[in-house]
Length: 114
Image (cartoon, rainbow, N blue to C red):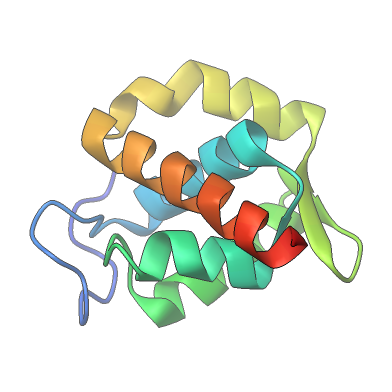
């Protein structure tokens, strides 16, 4: 994986600095807490300073373009291809990042649903 190829403004130490890792985290997050709106994903990842805002936007576009996730205009869901990628590579992400992202996404989904 390419290291430190992502914008890092607003990312705390221990956050992701690789665009590949960011796309992988998005697959993992969507698979673990789907369906998710963009707002829920932003709340989960930006609130914890795990990724840069611009890298998040680029990553979401990339996972949809590459068929790893689907977007219906409101929510993201994982595809079979995305499930395979997530399952094979999730261990390449720090456990603390995975856990924080999923926990915050589930909380954001609860808050926005009522």
